[in-house]
Structures are given as structure tokens and as C-alpha cells.
Amino acid sequence: MSIEKLQKAIFKIQYGMDVSLSISYPKKQLVEKADWMADNDSNQCIVCNDVFTTFNRRHHCRRCGRIMCSKCCPKYDSDRMCIVCQSVIELSDSQLSAEEFQIDQYLSNAALLSIINNNDFLLYGELIRLFQNSLRNEAVRQKLLNDWPVFFQKVIALLKQSIEKMQATEQFFEQQAFSVAEAQTALLSCLGLVINFTASTSQKYAKYLVETFLIVDYLVDAIKPSLDLTRLEQVAWALRNLCYCKEGAKQLINNPTFTGIIHHLLTGTQNTVEHAYSIIVSCTRHYPSTTELVFPLRTSGKVAKYDFLKQLSTMSKLQPIQQGLLFKIFGDMCTCPEIIAQLQTSPLFVTMIDTINQFSKPGRDLDLNTILVGSFEALQLILDTYSEDEDFIAKFCKLFTKTTVEVIVSNLTNSDSGCSLYAAKLLQKAFIANRDVFYGLIKTKKNRELFVNAAVQLQTQKFLFDESKDFMKEVLDQIGKGDEEGIYREIKKRVKALKEDE
Image 1 (tube, helix red, strand yellow):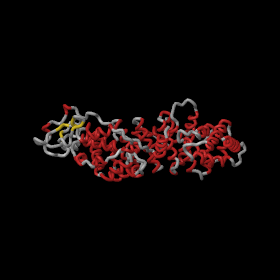
Image 2 (cartoon, rainbow, N blue to C red):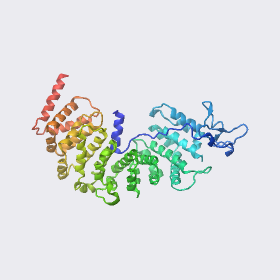
Image 3 (cartoon, one colour):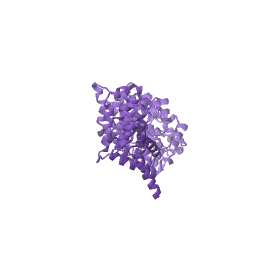
């Protein structure tokens, strides 16, 4: 796993957010020749509005079939293509890296920008596609926001009208009927732009859309049983990005249909389910009691299938990233004082530990890294949150078994992922919480060998995360306090020998 992929995976588990992009690949032919605009459909250019004359002739764009003047539809590869379609195709064919993308050339083209006031939904959609595919770095996002904020007003208006058209029979565009099929296409374009604009570790872009346009409520309105799986996935993706900021999470949670919306998303595609879990992670991060709304601890009737215990029991059927997110949700839920009493009287903790213990079994054909990051994070949150509640900590630590500690210790040197960092941090919290319990679990033959080898490696080799070494040092300090089994002494002896051999 590359460092970049690792950072994205950890960021997704921690915050329910990643910065992946929704790229809209253009068709070579938007409209078949038989469906092109007829010459008598317009007496002026659809872009610049110049009137056609004997000298200012009509030209059809070979891609979109619209009628324009030669200035707005120049020759392109020995044929005619309008300035919008040219820009879209050229951008798609470019071999630029993400950081090389820019939009100055579009913002300085008055004819191109005039499309924003055009009633032709197809050209409008292609303009949105152009900027959607350009939004690949922070500089472009900031530039578009600073220099052309009116664009977002138009996009959100089109998004809202598209949703309304798909659910009713209202007409939006003046020159031609805005059909349901056209509304579906427009909705995808708008959603793609929202996704890419907010695909940032900075919350300011999501906050801008949420506070300026109340966009979360519009997206919630789009989620109906009739919405197809493709658009449902895109809506869920956009909501995930918007809930990264506190304002977006609040707007979604305050919507009276919040719980039903999340439950509906959990019936979608694998990607939609992942987005749903990510939304819960983001909302719970801002408002810890959120999880109880979605996954009640005690349920009956229609929502019984969303009981959190049932979610854990079906974990093996989920994708690795979904399992990691579910563990993170559980950890965040445990930080909420209002429901901790219910948690302590439920079998949830036992179920969670039993699930983690399964990861020690060989032959599991899964990428466990993201699962383990989520589970280690959840356990660490519980130990950290209730460190001063001696009675609870004593009971909780006794749930850990030799197998649980084996899973943790086995990942102390998992340098290909963030597991080494999270395992070391969890072990440090565990020893602080109850040194005697965890020393007893470490000293067993198999765990001792695994732990000693890991501790020696962490002190003598380079690792991706230096913090892992710092956490291990604190663990060794705890072990050294009354080390009746000589574990600390064995580690020091081996480290000294290795350093002398260098």
C-alpha cells in the first residue's frame, strides 16, 4: 500500500471522508445527426446571440448538434466543434497531473461563460462537466469560488429543478421541454461538480455550499424509492462530503427523515453503503448521539433490523472499508455519556471483542488493514474516554483475551499500513488502563514471543510512523514496573546485542 493510499484510508476511517473524485468522461457524440437542431430552429447563434446573415452563416457542432456562428463553432480537426465541446474533449484527452489543472483559460473566455445564462440544458450540462473535471486541486476550487460564485447559484438551481422535474411535471427551460431523462442527466452533472468541489481535507468548500444554499435539504429531497441506484450513489457521495463539516452534519441530522434516509442508503450498492457508514462517522464525530438514532441499542418493529448488534453480526458480509467504518462508528458511539449505561448492560462489547478475535485466524482472504485501523481506533477511544471510571475499565479490560492481544501485537510491525501506529497506541492505552491484566495477556508464550520481536524491531528499525516507537516506549515503561517475567530485560538485552553488532 502506497503512503498516499494509506493516508486516504486512515483519513476515511477517522473522519468518514476521502478526497476521491467523480470524473465524468464525455461521449464523442452527444447528439446523432438526425436529431441536430434544424436550420430554421434559430435565427441567431445559441451561444453569443449574433444574428445569422449571408456573411454570418450557420454552423452545426458535430458533437452537440447545436447551431452557432463560426466564432463560437470554429474548425476543429478539419471539422466543426463548438467552444464548449472542444474544451470538454481537450480536457478529457489531457495527460495533466491533478496539480497541473487550472481554469484561468475558461474564466477568461466570455463566450464560454455566457453558457451559464443559456436555456439549452445540454450545453449547460457540458459547461458543468468541464468545471467538474477541472476541480482536481485546491487552487482550482478556490479560484472558482473567488472568481465566479454565481456559477454555484446556477448549478444549485439546476440541481433543485432537476430533482423537482424527476418527481413532478414542472418545466424549467424556456426553449424546449425539460424531460425527465434530461433532468436525470443534469442531476448527475450537478452532483459530480458538488462532489469534486468538496473533495478536500478543508471543510470550507462544503461549509460554503451548506450555508449558502441549504444544499443538504435538496439532496435529501432527491432520495426517493424511485431514484435509480446510480444517482442514489452519487447523492450519498455528495452528502458524505457535505457532512464532513459540522454545518452539513447538523443540517442532515435535523432533517426529520434523517434516520429513514440512512436506512435507505444501506440498501444501495456497495459504494452507497460505504457512503452511508461514512456519513454516520462524520455526523457522530460532530454529534456523538447520532449513532443511537440510526442503530438503536434496543429496537422493535420495522427498525429492529438496524439494531447495532445485528450490524456487527453481519460484519463479515461487508467490504473491509465498511467494516473499518462500522468499528469507528461504535468507538465514537461509546464516547456519548447518554448511552454508555445502555452499552454496559448490552452484549455489544463482547460481540465486538469476539469479532476482532476472528482476525487472528489464518487464510482470511481480506485486506484487513482498514478493518484493524477502525477496530483499534474504537478500542482506544473506549479506554481513553472512560479512563477515570475504574469500575467500568476493570470490567472492560477483562473482556480482552489472549487472542485479542495477539491480534494487536501481531500488527505492531505492520509497516505497510497504519495498523502499526494504531496497535501501538491501543496497547499504550491498555497498559495505562490496567497494567496487570495486559501484562498477564502479554506474558503467555506465543504473545510474549510476538511482543518481544515487535518491540525489538520498533527500537532498531525504521518505520513509517515514528509515533509507533514513542507509544512502544511508554508500553515498555509500564512493563518495567515489576517485570517478574523478565520481558523488559529480554528486550533490552536483544536491542543492545543488535546495536553492538552494527
